[in-house]
Image (cartoon, rainbow, N blue to C red; front, side, top):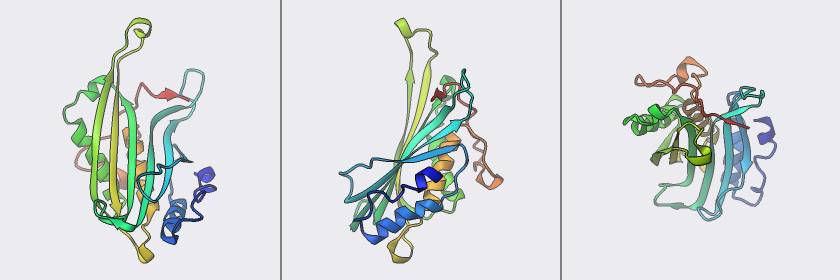
Length: 218
């Protein structure tokens, strides 16, 4: 996270103070060492001001040649409209994507969408995140390979897209560090990592997915 911290405020100098302070608050997030995170270009049409990060859960040296492997990846976008947005019910919105490859038989579980959404809400709850107006989708997609690719095993990917409105604190500034931490907890869970601490354990009897055989070499 150190490298990302050095550039978190890039491009935000002309933005309103609440947005600059909210982006700067991302520096305070304490993330697991498996997380690699960097700024990425933000969408320009969703709000007057936007900031984006991309992240990956990395398994060190687990590839055939000792290369690192990505177990899950995603993106977090912070949107800000000083005039407010009726759909958001606030002036900020957090938009996220988390995705990972699963064992095909796990992808066939009919309860997977509901369970996956509960991972998101559980991660926010475990961190004590204050938020409202959540929405999102859980998508699973299966791939089967033929012809020259027939040697590849079938693959199933899960993709969780979600957005919510962070509660604003003093000066209208949300504490985005805790939102980032919760989202990274979700990434680690879809990657199949065990909870970092007992209080981060899944709730309601839901367990993390095991390690993915389909993790991508870097």
